[in-house]
Length: 68
Image (cartoon, rainbow, N blue to C red; front, side, top):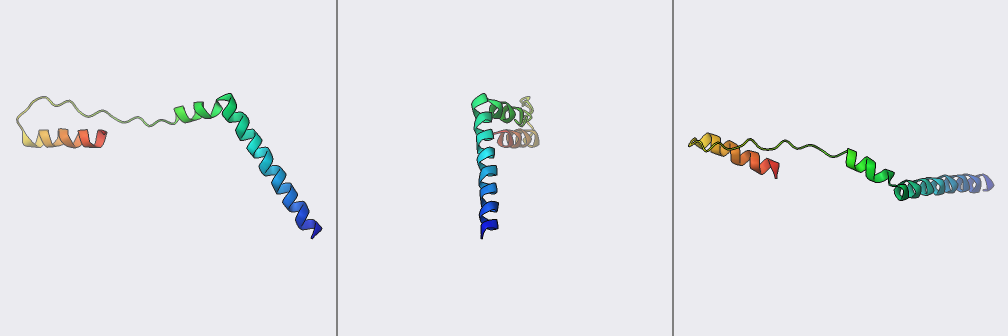
């Protein structure tokens, strides 16, 4: 029983240290820097040239749907 209590105490101390590290990271702004660097670049849709082709218009509309 005493061994079990020691194991639980060690795990609680480890988790507490992890929480303190995370709090310091958030307070110092490190978390914001990492989040902003993971932004995904989305390609912009191809410009519609005004052609009277149904296929080109459909491709343009599909590009707009996938962009938004």
